[in-house]
Image (cartoon, rainbow, N blue to C red; front, side, top):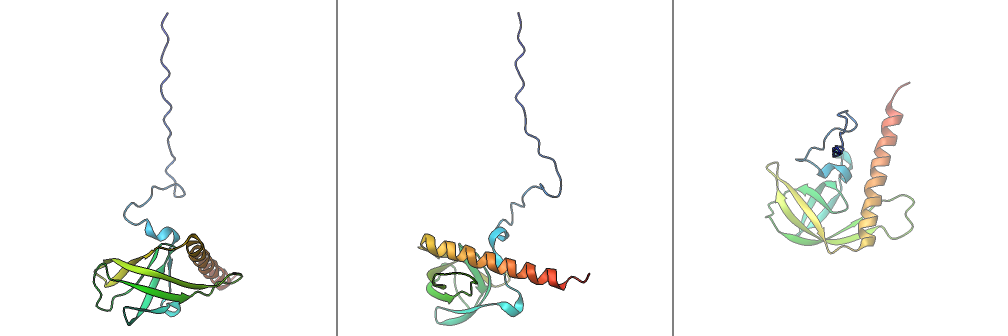
Length: 141
């Protein structure tokens, strides 16, 4: 008697817009909030005032002021997080990993506690919710 081997089932994923393949070149935007020009934060980095372009729980990007790759400094920000019961003061060491051609310094936050990461996640979420709420109010019915 011959038994046919069962062919392994291959998982096929439909190619719709909802399940489109990830862009492997740009996965950073998933949980990163990009500030509009008018809402950008400023902070001090190595004695200079810098303008924050975007932020996530793992890092941020700001406009270059003549820095070098791997420069690091202790930064401080008071984040405006609605309905957050704890202190919204954020303090961490930021290190420049990469400076783009557009003169944007891409940094990571070093040695953050879990609570600090959670606070940053909450901050990004609240900023995204605020932006979505503004967009829905702008739509004319």
